[in-house]
Length: 121
Image (cartoon, rainbow, N blue to C red; front, side, top):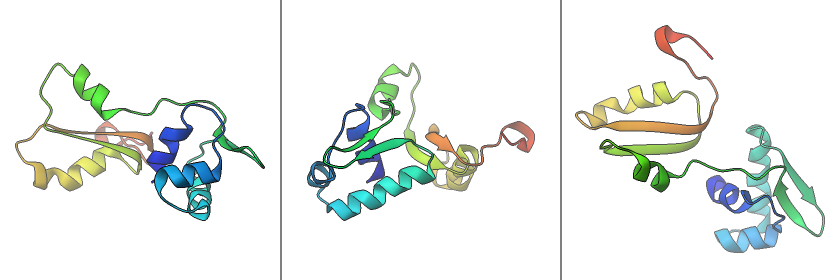
């Protein structure tokens, strides 16, 4: 649900909690709870009484369809995540399920990314 809220708010304009709730089929209280998750992800937003919520700056989220269209080589599976501890770890945990397939994972935010030789970044 958080991805859907971010998609609506990505334009940088104000959207009321009621509008967001109707678009997502949830209550305003559920929208409020999701907005609190943005705090945990360090995504700055404004909340103005009578106007609603808006992101401080418009954002462009990773778009699976656009990415796949731009690829020049075949990719069997592409997972796009809002946040993950490490895309590398995520891939290793699922490797057994996708043997022989070209599998990639992208994330808007990594909480504990690691690179070659286990180096943290």
